Length: 166
Figure 1: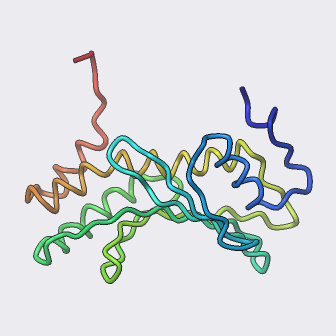
Figure 2 (figure 1 turned 45 degrees about the horizontal axis):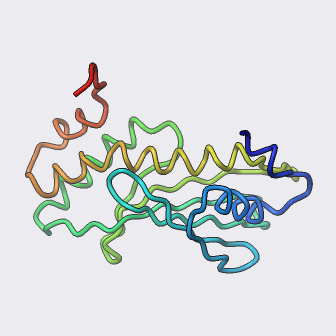
């Protein structure tokens, strides 16, 4: 059933829409304020922390998807290299590593200038893209940091197509 059948986006605040979507999927969430919500979304590899915040000033809905990552210090340059390769393959959003917080981050800003309104499907797709990107590249990040794999080789795992069944 489409989200629009459950949620009307007519003149609704974008964070209210996100809250309705989180309720629809039974995701744990915390409404931090009028303009921000945080939630936990379960993936195949791990649970991702997703925060969406609305900025009325620049009319942007910002999404940040994070997961903990504590690479050995000597592998951080290789991690940054694999991040560059991953970002070359991402059409929307980008990865970065916040070393001080020990967090891998995927972020995206949806600009809604001119009083545009984001629909539920659009926000659902935005959240889905964050989780899909994190899931897609998680193995490459792990191989680079913990298995000492070459960044170019590790990212090939993320872009390889699986054929057949196991």
